[in-house]
Amino acid sequence: MCAIVMNEAIDELAARFRGDLVLPESPDYDEVRRIYNGMIDRRPAIIARCTDAGDVIAAVNYAREHELPLSVRGGGHHGAGLSMCDDGLVVDLSLMKGVRVDPGHRTALVLPGCTLGDVDHATHAFGLATPTGIMSTTGMAGLTLGGGTGHLTRRYGLTIDNLISADMVLADGSFVTASESEHPDLFWAIRGGGGNFGVVTAFQFRLHPVHTVYAGPMCWDVEKADEILRWYREFLPAQEDELGGAFTFRVIPARAPFPEEHWGRPVAIIIWCHTGAKERAEAAFAPIREMFGPPLIDLVRPMALPELQAMSDAMYPPGLQWYWKADFFDDLPDEAIARTVEFGSNLATPLSIAQIAPIDGAAGRVANDATAWSWRDAIWTLVIVGVSEDPADMGRITQWTRDYWEAVHPWSAGGAYVNMMMDEGQERVRAAYRGNYDRLAAIKARYDPNNLFRLNQNIHPRTGTA
Image (cartoon, rainbow, N blue to C red; front, side):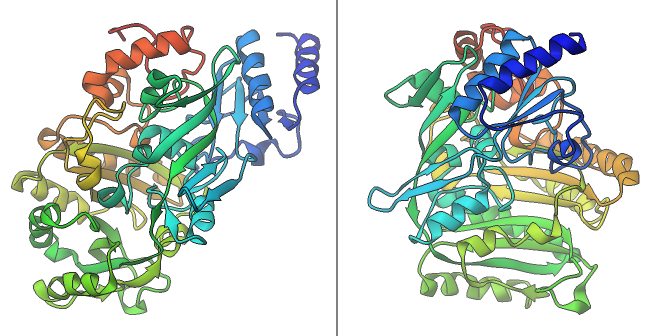
């Protein structure tokens, strides 16, 4: 498109757009196109910073009419950086923030630019919460559409299990509400199917009574990791849903609240979260605190849920280099534990982590075909994350993550989790949905037959084929 025609076309968009249109010549272009993963550097032709659903409709129509690549940005937190595109249009939802809590009905209406921290802040004031992820800077929209696992998964299920409805702009520019009673096929698909089906302009979530949890990290020397992980795989699935905990390999950061004498020390951590009464929580943790001798560091205590959710934020500011991979596991056999201890005890960088988290409990009592997210029969998810402040480490963190994943993958359930994938190819996308993929492809063909929404972990709009 020549410059004169391009300018006229942008004027056309501007005439029906209330937000900001950020172009390569705009003074804030480099700042606005920046996303969480500093490894990603893409240069869109237009960043359409939407203020409402009308702006989203205008931007989607413009991209379709002018055959521009289209990406959608909520929190911009995904590792693969699929919210930014080269030479296309970005529907940027980050200005569309707002949470309206209905404490009587225990619901929250959440706009797509919100982070987990925005939602936690609004719902916590009423002693309520919905299950989300584990970092408050994560975008709520992307987390939800991919599934959503975190501290409350065992007690209240995945984020999508608490989604009541979603307002959406479709590829043809039309506006619909997806729920169990309206467009139920679309509602089924967006619960795990990622951004393949449209742009969500508002979510309605179910809330639960959660205010203060008994939670925090309990750390042991990494030399005890094998023993503790073997105990953990048997212990946690046998507990009531109110107890959750993620086993993590990490280097102790040089910051409070960790004692200075342990800064820089590699450790095995379980980040616990107990949502029951304080007395039950203390009784549950008493034997754990003595089972392997006193923990090296014990920061488990009563705390507000938003404090737990934000505990890692300061360690991982925007702009770091990220590379991650993940797998689901039905079990953690001794061989898999041996390999994960081998790699987890030798992290690529001090900021790198590996985490095994439970996805059983309430989340596991949903049928595999009840939503697009198809791994209800798995017990664990392993997330391997190479992280560094230094762009020169990009090769190292990428290779370490891939080597770790390849070492443990033979014992996995063979699946993938779209929220924790890089650009890994169509075979891995199919693995994320296994038996649900063909149904998703058919729904994609109905709502986005020309695959306008393709800059994602893409589901092809053709029944049964890739």
